[in-house]
Amino acid sequence: MKYRNLPQLKKLTLLFSLLLAFMAAQGQQKYTVRVKIEGLQSEMKAYLQYRATKELFVKDSAIAKNGTFRFNGISGRPLKATLLLLPMVPAKKIQVDSRTFYLSSGVTAISGNNLRTAAIKGGKAQDDYMEFTEKSNTLVDSVNQYTWKVIATSAAKKPAIQTRLDTSRAQLEKAVRSFIAAHNNSYVSLDLVGDRAFAITDPDGFQKMYDLLSPDLKNTPDGKKYAQLLYLTRRLAIGQQAIEFTQNDPNGKPVSLASLKGKYVLIDFWASWCGPCRVEYPYLKKAYSKFSNKDFEIISVSLDSKSPDWIKAIKDNGFEWTQVCDFKGFNNDVAVAYGVYAIPRSFLIDPTGKIIAKDLRNDNLIEKLNSVIKTQ
Image (cartoon, rainbow, N blue to C red):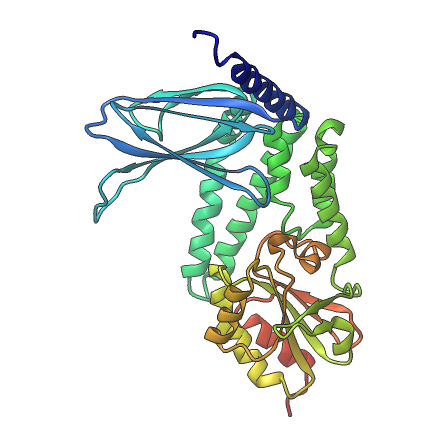
């Protein structure tokens, strides 16, 4: 009787072995996060969040009993993750206790009176991250402070504040480059490069930063992706020809960028679920209303994955301009060709197909169109 289920046990053992072999082949490793927060008066809900891939955002949860909880999972490489503690019962005023750290294979131990000030013992990436934050936190705070001041300051005083902001940004970038040079094989360095890869405004400066990375990091999937984004930044720089594409409209009819040649065209990347995109809707409508009869067109490329969501958003928002989608989400063929990893993004091209502006926000789009299109 004791060994009746031996064949089944052998099957389970084999399956587990195959799983471990698959994980190893894919570079996946197991992790454990053990947390002990002293002094919690009641049960809390703990959340662990991190982006595993471009498409996969992991959200895990656990109950913190007596201040103790843990998470287990697998990851392909050290990843920046966030822990949050929230009350079990919703309240009007909630003070979120949170902490960002690097999740690595093996055990990460977190202990203290709260997450914000807890001690963290983990892998090398966590040690590197702590070193970087200790050196850069003051500079990050300064950049954030002056950024808000620029927004809130009157026009007369804005130039002086902008100068201070530019100085703080330059100091922060110098600290980042210094850290990467000293830790060129750290995943923290790779992520610092990645933070600057999705909106490269200075290709030469980004190239110098990227070149600091070790050959091993450059050869990782992320390292190769950042090199590709740099290439696309140069390929899609102002003055370059836009990349041709064809995609279907809501009626299933193919629409090509070439069919709009002879007009000023705004290639607009968006999605029905994108909150920041909604902020731009009124300005797009304003621009289309003013210039659509003066050789101006918008072609909006959606990063939606479900047709009903896309169609509903078009109707609900009253979009009158050209809409296309292939329902591949961030893997949309046009988005991939244009290196779009965050939205909203946009490219303004002239009647010859040449890129003349990028990521025009708010009334900047109207101002640019006023300067290139005769409205009289």
